[in-house]
Amino acid sequence: MLPLIAIRAVVFVLSGTVVVLTVLSAIRTFVLPRSAPDMLTRLVFLITRYLFNIRLRWAHTYEARDGIMAFYAPVSLLALPPAWLALICLGYTGMYWALGVEPLSTAFTLSGSSLFTLGFTTAGNLFTTILVFSEASFGLMLIALLISYMPTIYAAFSRREVAVNMLEVRAGSPPSAVEMIARFHRLHGLDRLGEMWRSWENWFVELEETHTSLPVLAFFRSPVPNRSWITAAGTVLDAASLCASTVDVPRDIQTDLCIRAGHMALRYIADFFGIAYDPDPKPTDPIRISHLEFDAAYDLLKEQGVPLKPDRDQAWRDFAGWRVNYDAVLLALCALVMAPEAPWSSDRAPEFAPPSLFAVLNWGHRTKPPEGHP
Image (cartoon, rainbow, N blue to C red; front, side, top):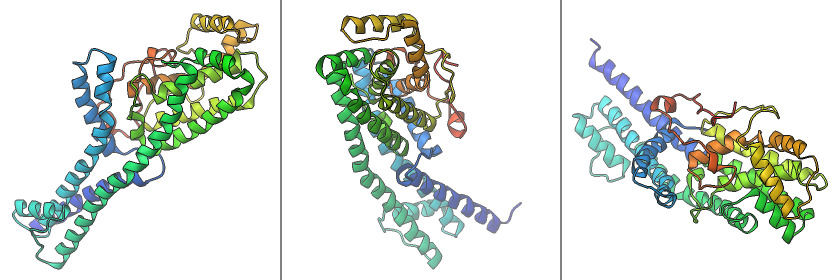
């Protein structure tokens, strides 16, 4: 039987560890300027997703599901501070009890009073008073973090959506890579494509930075239900891949750079969410676009007067060689964010299955890639 002083020491250490881990969770989520998955944040988002999935059972149209999921990211984000505050409150309750504040209800009252700076309960000694001040500081810090980072999140969201909204003018609704090329051919001329690839390369670079350092942005839905950042990304990547493989225009290195920036951005985002994919696929690996679908796109572009390379089979092989770099991650991210239907992306995405609690607690967990991809 351990003496009471040893029990109090163990409780103090364990409770202090809870507080430290909770503060580190807040720092990783909002302050650290790099991709750093956090177990507590993932757990909060996962529990919220399960609750939203229950509500989605009664939604029978995409518009209804989109209206429900529009609240998912804001609700999950606002659920983080209460989770952090609750853990800090419990952690300090244990430390106060370990220092002799009894009974446990009195320690809990002192912790709540200190955390929310209510001040209706005071400490009895110097060391406990120091803990009270530190707890009050953590409480204020967590609330300030959420308030200060809200403008950052919405500024990044606004920049992302400007390009997504503009894509509807060029690629239709839902966005189509074939329609994008055909309209550009009619309105601007294919010699102007380099400017567009350059702007989308910059968009992909910013997407990677914002959606890994502030991953909640991936779940913020566009103001218009039939738009989405991930279907826009897929449309641009497919259009660039068609131009590099099928459209008979002078080779432009900017096309290749846009594709590379795009598939790297999607892969980094997939890495954060634990989505599995082949990091080094072969050009001959299968993709979720069939040869017949490619032939239909080839014929449609030809009808629109777009100059095409004469060797259709070689064009298909070249297109598949580009597409294989982002095929799996594109479809998996479409499923993750429940994207609106768009050709060659969300229209063939697998149904998203939230990972189990064990998987969330497993830091090395990765979800399976979409069926049909190695």
